[in-house]
Length: 371
Ligand code: NCD
Image (tube, rainbow, N blue to C red):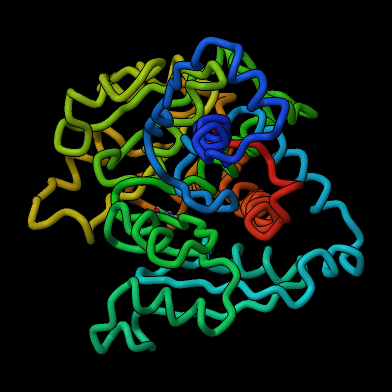
């Protein structure tokens, strides 16, 4: 529960006690002699956002304090190294539903393996093989899953904001596995874990300067990328400089105002020269809404080739959330090359998602703090 919500519950209590009209003998005597007490009925502070309703939810990376991020990183390592026979008792027989309205390979599989690795029972509902196809709303599907015993729902949806709606309807912990062009918080956490493993080995307790001096260039279709957005919201909080690179079509000028520590460099080679990490993105053809792009021109300017990498960033980490389109945003040689940590990202995804699923189902007394 956020601090704001805690204040909301705690502050009005004295005022309520004073207004009950029930008084002890002592207080009645005191009331006869003391001047009348002026009642100050302080309205509870209005929370900046009422979400998340459920403290186990992870809807946005902004829900997490750096302390909570550190806690998740530490739990991820602990759970990853735990004896599987011990680990699978942690959430034994707890029920987790995966609700996927968009296709997914690594996110879905790693969430499922993570939940199963902790002993939970999982069930997958996809838009292609369920009553969603018959027109059932997200709210009704969520309530149905809750009635079936789901204790948490992992949601991927093509509409930005859908996880907030589902959480409001079900009040269950909801884990955002990607909502439209908005956020993908567990991807940002696994990307962070990958970066730390290489640039700050052994560090799990992160702070505002953990990534000071590190420039992460995100290149490609930033406009449509929830991965870019979650990383832009997380990495600068640890001191990283995020450099955005791409054509105006995929990277409007106003993106510089997206937050502190973020700037634009349209020249890919110049961006590479400053980078310790380069994160490549797929062109999200399914979200282009009729926009045309000149692929040859795009590749000439923004494709990550072996030559480009050797010339401008010979020791940078090459990352990609997947799915990768070989020969488009990066060459096959770079994807399979020694600087690529793409498959490591996938592996970190399982550990991070174990920590996030565990947090979703933990008792409130053991929950990690949130913003
Ligand atoms: C991405 C997604 O779905 O947001 N992939 C992922 O989850 N690892 C990126 C993409 O689809 O291009």
